[in-house]
Amino acid sequence: MMQRTTALRDRDMTGGGCAAADPEVASGGLLNSGRAAGELGLSRPEFARAVQLGIVRSTGLPGSAGAARFARDELERVRAAVGRPEALRERVETVAGAAGAAVVLGVGPSRFTRLARCGHLTPVAYRINRYRAVVWLYLAAELREFAAREPGMLRNRATEADRELLAARGDLRPRRWRGRHVGLLLRRTADPWQRAAVLACVLPEEEVREAVPDPAERIVLAALAPPPPYGHPQVPAAAAVAEPLLKAGPPEEVHWYRTSLDFALTGARAAPAQPKSTGERGPT
Image (cartoon, rainbow, N blue to C red):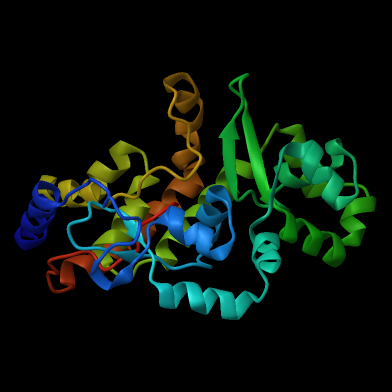
């Protein structure tokens, strides 16, 4: 644990957070996210979504303070796998809000909202609009797949379970998004402490203190915590609206992440100390 803490401190003190003047890093010919996006024919938001979904894998640089870099071999692998750039853009295309998503499904906005609130459709991201309301984003490809797979749900009445959830003013969208977000982050790293940090970041602070009584371990988890997801607002008023989305809410959800964190910590504490994180960094 002491080795891990020292390594993190040294990384933060020596890691040059400044980007290289040349967008292509000299060491290994690695590219920054802007250059890599251009190489794949994607906009920056589209590229960030491709990284989030694990379509494009980043390469962390020692001492880069978390800056993401991308190998040309990785970009070639993606090009070979997806073929034409349009196919890649289709995989990462998103629609925002109930009105846009309903058009893709071929239903009315109210029916779409009911399906999403009841957990049948999972958001991939969110944004906060000028009215400080949460706008959920959905992958267009997933909406089309749902329409083809579940035509009855687009036409039939809501199930009894769905009606009960709606009567109780339930909304599973935040919980479903958190589950997806955490799952994507966990798939991007094999480092046991970084995996524990992903699980800890979604728990309320008091739960983390109970699960991790050692202050040194909490420092490590805080240092390894993933940044807010791509699109998280920077304006304080909007950020205050978005912050609750990052934390587990219902007791059963908190219990699930707490149990997962306990299991992850058992493995992390038993693992050999590693001087550097082995996980990927980049847009989340």
